[in-house]
Length: 84
Image (spheres, rainbow, N blue to C red):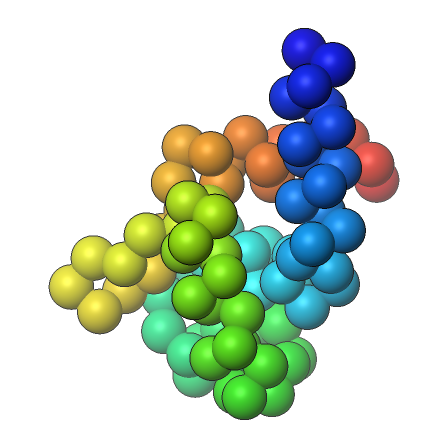
């Protein structure tokens, strides 16, 4: 458990505010860049730069051009919610 908590803290700092906002926007139903922009308030250039990172970390997956949270992404979101 201790290592898992550290990994979530590491992910939180690695993603930063913008990465977390994108993840939360996807969780709320944003599936493409334009909708993620509307939900998060972030510029498209930031979104395009962070999406590959979220995919590489296996927090999101792309299916037929749309983005979805993975199981790991859902667990990470739950951990974020505990901070608030």
